[in-house]
Length: 119
Image 1 (spheres, rainbow, N blue to C red):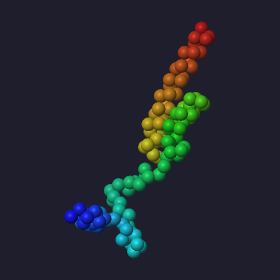
Image 2: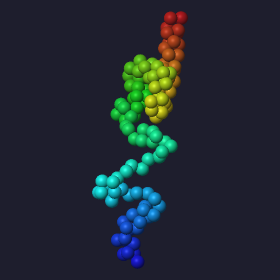
Image 3: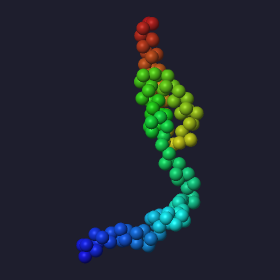
Image 4: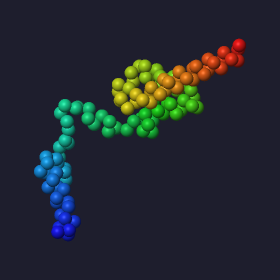
């Protein structure tokens, strides 16, 4: 029984996939009749399969990290945030929002520093 399960596992999995309506894709791919299973209602289902720009972390988080060296990057990303850049890819929203907060904190810190120095 155990040997039958051990050696028949691949056949069992393929049988389960065929009986449940899912395609394993191996047989269809060899025949050239392979079709991608998609959702008719959700057209942009594969939208998030692409990698984010800037080493995979997105423009927002990349600008946030680079902003500690060049603070103008926070303002650049804040402009992107208020310009609704995240509608292209919603995964960018959190990073761009973090830049807006960092730019606000940096601006307040600079204003307080200038006020203390001049007054």
